[in-house]
Image (cartoon, rainbow, N blue to C red; front, side, top):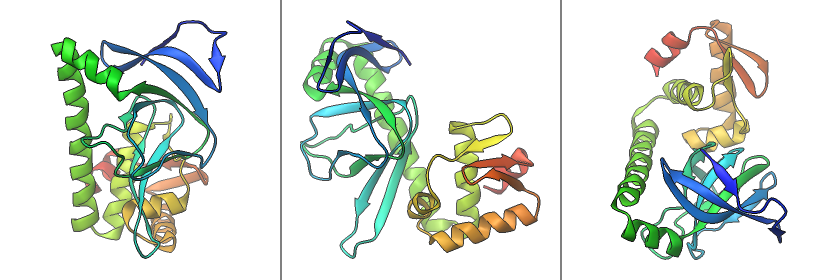
Length: 221
């Protein structure tokens, strides 16, 4: 991941022009912006004018159901690209979990780049395919796994995506985790407490989990 700033002093309305590497070797002109905790990046059914890459922090994409319940569709970590849409509008909303910095590239610019460069087109297609694979894995998790298996799979996934020296950092809240796994916050807390009693994990803080046996956790997930 690289962002090369054209002019470090050029900041207009919180935007800093940059060259964003959306995929390996695919640099596209855009700009970077910082979003504060829980700030909305875009809303459901808003015009999908940009594609986004996480430079720092974490972003959640969500959908609010008719009865008021929230489903978190994905967590996007540093290096992840999101906001790629087939149609003209966003299917989900996106919010900053904590303070984060994003690179934004206009879809029209990206379209022009991929049309003129077959390698860039293949790289963006790969990004889309990887996003589809992650969504499919999430669908299996929601539909076929027990509550304990869901939490185990989540910790195993996060240990790969946000590793710490002895475990995993969880920048999201317990409510976020519950809404991602389709569970209640009470169920998530109960399962984590049970895993701690079984010495499978240890919690240094509410956001830092030590994995006592990483291989056992991955096998269970």
